Image 1 (cartoon, rainbow, N blue to C red):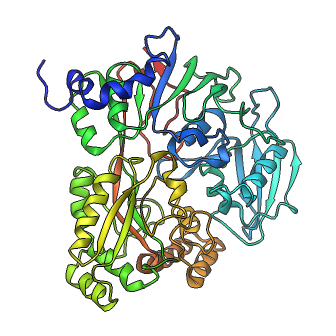
Image 2 (cartoon, rainbow, N blue to C red; image 1 turned 60 degrees about the horizontal axis):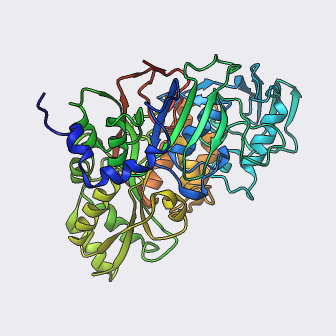
Image 3 (tube, rainbow, N blue to C red; image 1 turned 180 degrees about the vertical axis):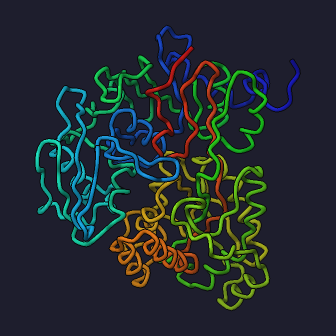
Length: 507
């Protein structure tokens, strides 16, 4: 049957095809004799990878953690909370004391999940020495005053009121581990799959946990296969070497739509695409140049080209469509004349700097090229600098002055605290504002939902003007799977149903 776009012959004949598929041949596959094993292809993190759930930086880290461990709560697609290991959570009238009741669940070694395990896990994440990006969620917890009331109940005491506190209990990196755990070479969790083997930068093999509290998985085994290059992931899927290819570009999705042997899971408006400007280092210590960049970029062109017209326009804010998003802030439009004037006023005509990019996201390379071209029109010389996908997000926390970034679905307040609060655990722009911090504190201490969201809106106006985040679009999250796979659910990354493999079946 004649087709346009991708065909098996055209893909596998590509220059990347043979080289990219060669490493997979040694790992087995759909035809390798492993019965009822799902093989999923993700971009990986290289030789420094770990199975420590508190140290997640890539989506493959999160997906492996989700298979091995469980969190107290999880995010639905709209970021509302659903119970997991926690059956219930409630605060006192002040929002300063939170009582959490646990369900009956066990770890893979047969031990029950207890309140002591929860306290140990959260205390560990909050420890600055671990440098977990999730530590910000528990900065207000007074662990000295917090305690286990019984094996299935604990009270967390906060140093300040926070009615948004439970949202942090479902964030990536907050999985519960057995008390006393210090090594993750052969981790024990309470998730639907148990550990079999793992090679950093290589494959990970997990086996179903028959005593999982929510019911044993349908699959016998789950294997994570590292395939960093997007073309190679598609090749591996179409050749039958893997059953699932994660994180595909919009253009790839458009071409795969006509492929008869795969199906697509496309979650729209789920991932913020942007560029973070480091306000703590020249040249972006000058707010005129920050404003020039924000005014000089063409968001519509970026969406049309980098997202193949399948995304949504961004307004330099995170969380479009989510609860708490400040939709009333006017859309920032391109204004080349204003941007040029700001560059001249700052005495920065011809200023050169690098735009950090990587193939960690399929649209980054195209976006970096377009942004460079657009900024040239306002008198700035921005040159793409490609970093390794495996270490990109770790490196750009401290290196470079302008870096492409992306963030999947999170509660808006959670994102704001992590990215913009002074000293926040993922505040890569270096933004600092006592006014913003005070608004976030007031919002957290406000029990009335409407009033709390109003304060979050005020905080977003500040970061929209001065936060150093160019959020130019929201991409559709695309996954492709073999037609022999069923039970997958289309969902945004970071939410409960994304990369959830315990209800998957293979025909």
